Image 1 (cartoon, one colour):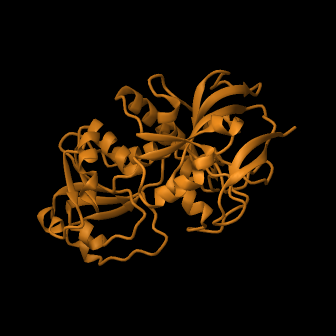
Image 2 (cartoon, rainbow, N blue to C red):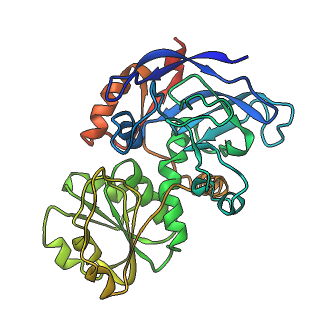
Length: 350
């Protein structure tokens, strides 16, 4: 039988979120039941509730940065045990047969990864509901182990913000000798700085405003430049091997591409809601690349968690009760958080 649990949901597009009750499926043979302790608030949650990218499935329970404790397992589960500290990220299933799933890149599943929320559960055709809830039921293959040394509130944002920035920094082989620019110092950007620094790269923060300079340097950046000053784009021409763009705002791509060396790459993990444009000469003349990166697979996400534990990296968080989610959304849009809101799900049990 399914189980009723308390959640915070948007009943319709752009509507304020409110306390409600949802049904979680009965655990199957390979399922893990997780009592959620903390859930991060990602800017993606706001885009989805506002249907900024596509039509949504409502009522919508956002949240794909989930950390908690296993309370029950199905009879066939071998990867996790009751009492384990675990996490769940952006997807909860995939076809498991295509070349991408077999390669451990389930986020690119040919049949489509099953997103943690705002999707349909292939088992039931019911909406998937995310981490703004007291419990979740997930197949063991899509549940991550939270290493010792990471608290659950700090670990929760790593399930998206951590892997979203770790994956491109790993794929483009950043390390000692690499010059990396991070565009934006928000939830994603602050993790990019920490991870880039831990990998040994020379990290520069490019931010619209100088007010985050002290934070950027404290987080591990070697340099900070405010892009509101147009001279930055002249002074830093041909300076970087990699630019990691973490913002969802529209940028002058040609200006940023001009900051890359020959063979440099600009990798985008932020998603604007409008089309972007550029002159191809910005790429062709210096063999530059413009790329995107979409989270990471389960194997790499576990690798990222272990890396963060080993290097003592965690998100900078502001923990809030569920009743403050709507206020938090407004503050995220206003860039008024340092650097990730995390919902204390215990507040949903009161």
